[in-house]
Image (cartoon, rainbow, N blue to C red; front, side):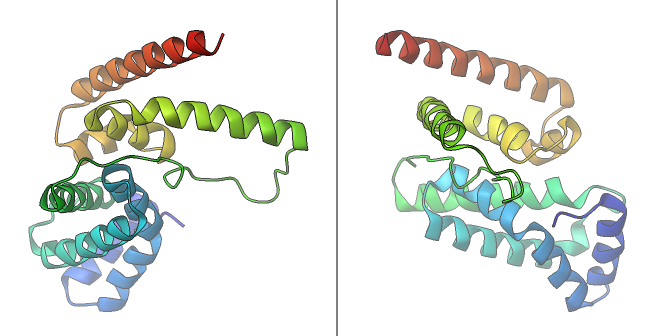
Length: 189
């Protein structure tokens, strides 16, 4: 369960004063989101889990430098993303990204008919294949917005850029994704 900024601020302040249970609550809230973020970059589940864990550890030791009043979630995701990038670089390989882990699947309350499930699976496979052909920075901005539902302000914080830059990066990434999807769609015809 992802927290609200006001609740996060209280937990961060408590954690800054040595309350490890408060930080543990922040970890519980953002573990899945941090792992999805790392997975978008590394492409490997084990690497993503390690990067998320190391990101939480680095964030804990950096709490003293956390800007009071700033949102915690994008700050944490920036640390996790940097850790994931460092791991990928250290491994000396290009990540093959499968964003299916980054997808936040609906609960069992929204059961699809077999036909709807088959169409949704086919559409998801098509979109994920197209996303895999994008540059990392394009995949990351799309994943932050559409898989992780970050606001423009949170994306700007996580990517260390202005909101206007986020808008233009997202627009360009969607245009590139559209070009790839149209190209693949016409290849299937």
